[in-house]
Image (cartoon, rainbow, N blue to C red; front, side):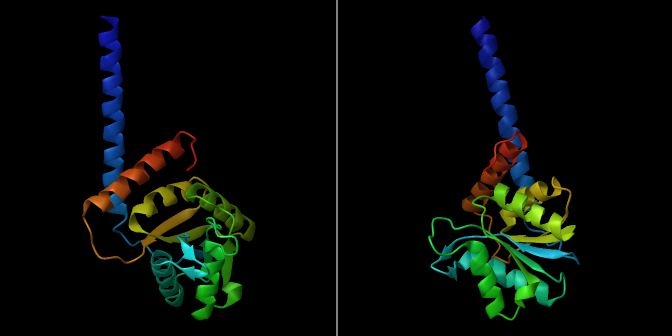
Length: 196
């Protein structure tokens, strides 16, 4: 009798967690399709893979979108993020900076966070840099599925945050939903103090 009650309670808990994760994933997908770009103190471009000093296609697309926002005068500064990711020479943040300089952004307009190895650490480090510089608002540039969790982490640091996903071809395939579910799990783990 007691085992039945325990199993029923465990099943109920699993269903509640699954429902929460799926509901959040749907919200993540919706948020990832909205461009909220408006004037802010800085454009924050989240890192992605780099290959021996060259941005990966994903990082390049993020950098190009951030550059477009900068040229459109949405913010006077750009903050690039991302650590080494296993590369002994280059970091994502530095590769981003170099790419933007080659495309006409003055070096003094670029801030680099080049230590972090995860979204949680990137947002914490970027928020600390912004606080020290007196910057209170940012436009976050990343992939659509990544915007929601990043915004929540930065807002928890007291910042005003607007999401601006990099342009991609509209997809509703299983991979896109899987990425939203993963971000949902990451968001809820962060909420209970597990940083990934």
